[in-house]
Image 1 (cartoon, rainbow, N blue to C red):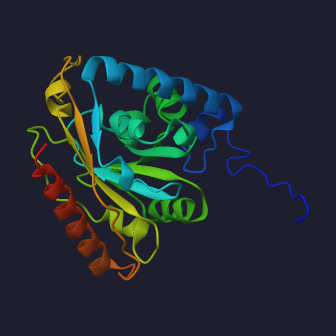
Image 2: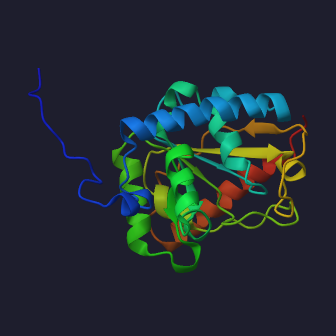
Amino acid sequence: MKPWKFDTATDFGLSPRARLSSLRREAGLFGGAVHLAWSILSRAYLKAAHRVRVVGREHLPKSAPYVLIANHTSHLDAIVLSSCVPLGQCNRIFPIAAGDTFFDNLPISIFAALALNALPLWRRKVRVAELVELRARLVAGQSIYILFPEGTRARDGVLAPFKPGLGRLVAGTAIPVIPCHIDGAFEALSPQRRFPRLSAIMVRIGAPLSFIDLPDEKMGWLEIAAKAERAVRALASHPS
């Protein structure tokens, strides 16, 4: 039997405000309870209001770590993808959210951190150190990231080219990347709408992608972005 070892929380010493937007944030008992309650409520809402249907759930790995990627047209997208993961793993799910949208305002930061369990990435000033920290957390921990490689919601509902940030997280690792396509979220809650419509949403989940043989450098990141984009586009053209 291995001797018991006490490990200090990775966000130990941070102020409550700094902890909300820290990439080292740990949920803790209270945060975990809030996120579990939100997961239960949001799944019930999606089932009742949007009749969410998931095709290909068998492609999800049995355990973390892995990364879920998809097209991005709506604020519903991260909630929809989270609902595809078994409820017992909900506290391992970390949507990567735009810091300038979800972490600049205190009330929204509290919601993003406690309910969504989101981790911030500032789009206008992305630092290499932040991507390195996200990668280290993914590789070392039991985390499930939700990432939208387009970088922002498509205002017209059309899939845009993927950016290389995904590659900087997974290049040269054995971490599976699971391509998904969300159909109907744009009609339910497009960027132009303030309140959702009661319309159906469907998620197609594809086979895991592996990028263990691609180098953790610019050419590898670009190739990963291109392959991931092709996988998501293929799911978009798949018959219902």
